[in-house]
Image 1 (tube, rainbow, N blue to C red):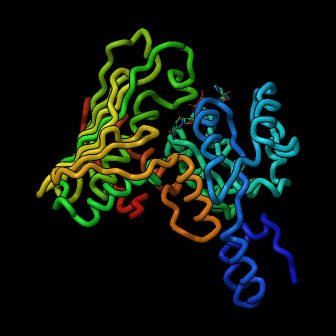
Image 2: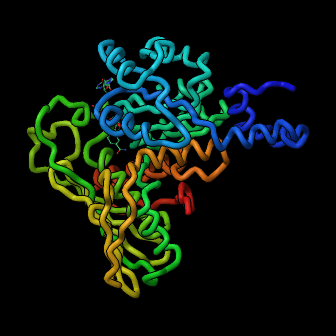
Image 3: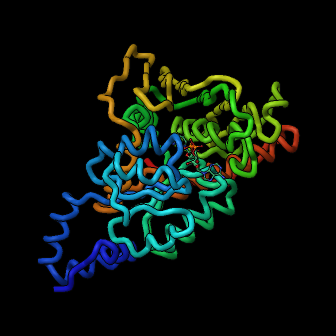
Length: 378
Ligand code: NAD
């Protein structure tokens, strides 16, 4: 019997060929289905900055279907530290120059790109070309055109793609999505969503450099407000108008400080979002025809907190969102479960980001959006 390596298994699954292989060869099918449940996919983190160091690597110690198998870093001194801390073999350590040779490494199934935003597309495309599944941090890229290049590269190389939208795996978020879907509080009429923090310190950080970040608060935190506005209504907006506010131009020389935007939805619902690098905000409130529900905080690392007009206080066991997120993607690859944060969702959000910037450029003029159900995952 032909032995399937991890690479060929992923390739066949991606190309939809596994089905026929399984039907034609039942002993192989049995072996694979047992393997799939027990299997752990190897993840390589690209970029060992604060998010990888303090969130993703610790979360990978709690995952059921994947584990930290490798690292890709541009900082030589981090190699030995990470190798020792996480027991990573030398053969699974890469730098930005030799990264493409990761194609020959069967221990790496998924490449997770955790670099400044303008570097996402390049590394996601190289990961896809290496035949690896891809997780791309948010925001997916710095333009819609770049999102397309990532999606195309993943399709062409038959690998799966997810955006690092950890909230899509969070139980509080999923409870709220259930309220909207089941109309627990009637129809959602108005959504208010805030996502911001006060940025201080190093004025040379990449988040304040448009060439690396693609934009300011909107790119960094605004995607959370866009996401909550959408899962707070279970629809994509049909139009958006936006405004920008600047109070510290000497610090925010290159990037947006505070942005507000209003969304219209086809059923008459309305949403207002605020995102800022100069004000704290971390909230989603949905006003409905028969009550309301709220998450506050709505998108920090948790635990999230939620209340409703029925007097309910939401309480779920706390598990690292990033562990849930990476397990969701591994299960999607291994068992064909739904992809809760597909590339189309990241691209949809970037279409909205570009429409918001365009509205601001045009003095707040309403921008029409034709998104259909793009990126809506129920
Ligand atoms: P960071 O500044 O802490 O780390 C950035 C990493 O990229 C560092 O390892 C740095 O060495 C490397 N790098 C390579 N080239 C660089 C360059 N030219 N300039 C600056 N750094 C360079 O950033 P971070 O907070 O880890 O964010 C990385 C990505 O993760 C971003 O896309 C960010 O939006 C995303 N992120 C997501 C979440 C989330 O909750 N999903 C949270 C934080 C960050």
